[in-house]
Structure formats: C-alpha cells, structure tokens
Length: 252
Image 1 (tube, rainbow, N blue to C red):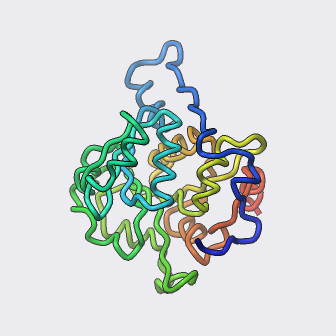
Image 2 (cartoon, rainbow, N blue to C red; image 1 turned 90 degrees about the vertical axis):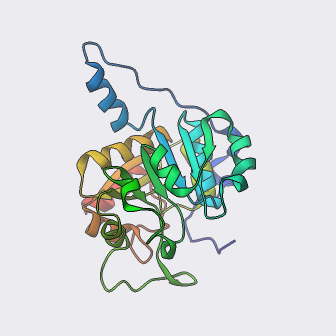
C-alpha cells in the first residue's frame, strides 16, 4: 500500500466500513412530466444506469461495491477475463455481471476507465464507446508517485483523442480507494468529486452518479483545463475536500 498523503481520510476517521454502506433513495417522477423528460432527468442524476467498470483492482472494485449499494447495476471487466471476476460478482449479487472490455462497453450506458493509464490506448474498439459517456478515472504516472510528462497536455485530452466518438469526462480519479469506500455514507459534510468535460449533459450524468454515491459533484470546467487540475501533479489530486472547500477553491 502506498504512503498516505497528509490530510487524506482513513476509514477509521469516518466511522464506517464497507458493510455500513446503505442504499440511497431513487428520485421519483415529478408531477406533470413526460416519460422522456423523466428519463432524461433520471440519467442526469445518475439513476437507473448500468455502469461499465473496466479495471477491477482496489479502486475499481470499490467503485463497483458502492454503486451497487446505491442501487445501480454494474458490468465489470478486466484484462484477465470475466471468469476471474466470479468472486466479486458473487459478492455483489444480481446487480453485477462480468464481461470482456468491449462487451462491457457495449452493454453499459456509461463506462468508467480504472486501468493504468498506459493501457488505455487500444483497450477498446472506438465504435464500442461511440456517443457514450466515458469517464476517465485513470492517472498518468511517469514513475512511482511522479506525474507523467505529457508535454503540457492533459491525460484526458489524450483519451478523448484515442476515442473521438465518446463524450469524455474526467472524474473519480482523485480519491484514495479506502476513502471512496466509506466517505459517501459518513455523517457530516459531503466530500467532493470533481468533473471536467466539454459536454454539459455528460457532466450532468456523471454528477448525478456522484450525488447518488453520497458525494458532492464539483465542476472544474472544460476537459483540458479542468482535467489538468485533477490529474497527478494537479492541485486537486489526492486532496480530499468538502463541498464547501472545493467550491471555495474553484472560485478563488
């Protein structure tokens, strides 16, 4: 396990463990709304979506657990094949299934990349993510704990270049997996998860999922400038902030 960063929450500090996760209420249809408006509203809040998670290490498995606890369905994939995910799928129950990466992308409404950054290029056929929200939760490192030198480009800029048909949103990459596992159901002020992207609707969808998980979505702006803030070497990486602290930082 890597050294803990100063100021980072540990599960003991929030007083919950994975078994304490609770399901969050689903939004209901507003009076007078049409079915189509209702569907758009649900998706903007992250409800009733099937999320594909590619990468099932500590962070990917943690995301899967808290998504299922919040009432979402997940499709899991890794480089070793779906059969290696049988124990995790059994733990998560009927809301979870396993597939190969391209199959997970095809079956999911939203896809989260949680693999090492160097494996992203060529991981999926571009058609598999055409017109889909693709959350880049990867972190580009050039060495142990050192950010990669990308020549001034954001890592998510490269992901968007490799998958030009997708709506890329940078998110879910700044928090340690132990904090992610429990902080969304802890009492007190919500911690922030950040979103950066060039498509407003896609960011709203990701923000809805963040809200479902018990965190506060905070928009850091366009994919390039906002993504750089979140990636390793950026000022928001691995820096847990409450919603108020994050909004104050963004507005300063």
